[in-house]
Image (cartoon, rainbow, N blue to C red; front, side, top):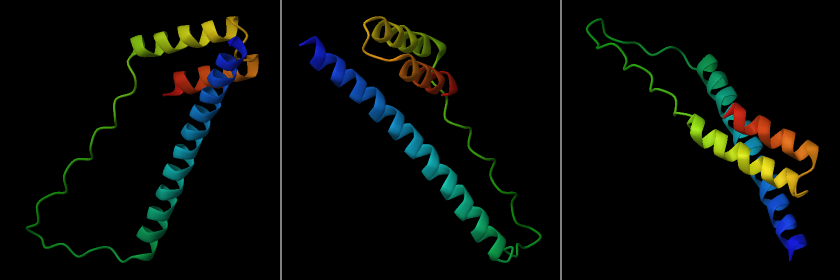
Length: 99
């Protein structure tokens, strides 16, 4: 039973990392495509009386510090139980702190 839990936790950690990396790559690629399209398209003509463009939306708020601390505590517990290796622990810790 502990081996099953360890395998499940490791799989969840790896899947979470893969999902985060995939999301970042997709976001970066979408930004590159937008830059390419903007460079190829001529700038739009605006009449002199046009209203100024709306302000950009605020970035999504990152996880609160309390949530990050709770995640780090859980991560530390998994490492102490031997479920996560040092490398997996460091990777997940970096992901939590970056978010």
